[in-house]
Amino acid sequence: MIKQPPGLLQGFSVLLRRDLLLAFRRRSELVQPLLFFVLMTILFPFGVGSDMKLLQEMAAGVIWVGALLAAMLSLDAIFRADYEDGSLEQLLLNAQPASIIVLAKVLAHWLISGLPLILVAPVLALMLGMPEQALGVLMLSLLLGTPVLSLIGAIGSALTVGLHRGGFILSLLVLPLYIPVLIFASQAVDLSMAGFDVSGQLSMLMAFFLLALVLAPAAIAAALKISMG
Image 1 (cartoon, rainbow, N blue to C red):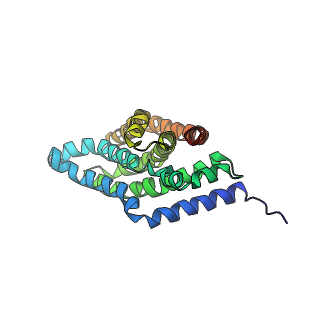
Image 2: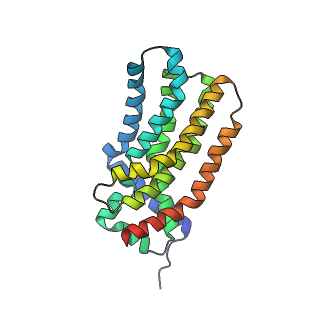
Image 3: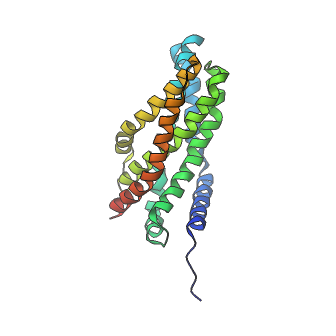
């Protein structure tokens, strides 16, 4: 009896569990983005002073710049280990569509690097003097924006996976594409602190997320095939 290949959902969940298990085995890499995010936010007041009004005005930008840089720290690791041990090529050759494979790996990356940032961001924001009424918008902006960072970053990671030292090139590739997310997300939080309507900024973040979710998996798969070829 010929064994049938797993379905799309089963293959997706198997690869997601595999990547999460491997990530938890490398605990030092797992905590590095979160530790960087926390330390950057904690150290920031020491650099600009203890003026709470100034810190409150800069809180949204500090949180979002920290989240952006923390996400970039782990981008190179999305495909690197699988590329080096040869398993990435095997994954791309199996019966599952390449876009499903890369989407599972990107989701694993976001769960490891993005979700912890969202959970600790309110505590750090309160430390910077952000009013409580803006915390909901902050978390919503991170919930919409950090997956976009992972999806866009995975394209750059796929393009540079074959390079020996591709971290610098990867940063140059993805950083300009991160700027719109940073602008609209930090602006949404700033406007919410001032009591203004933020539906326009959140709608733009939602649009970025949907576009990235639809377009990025195919782009990542194509970039991987180019790098592997």
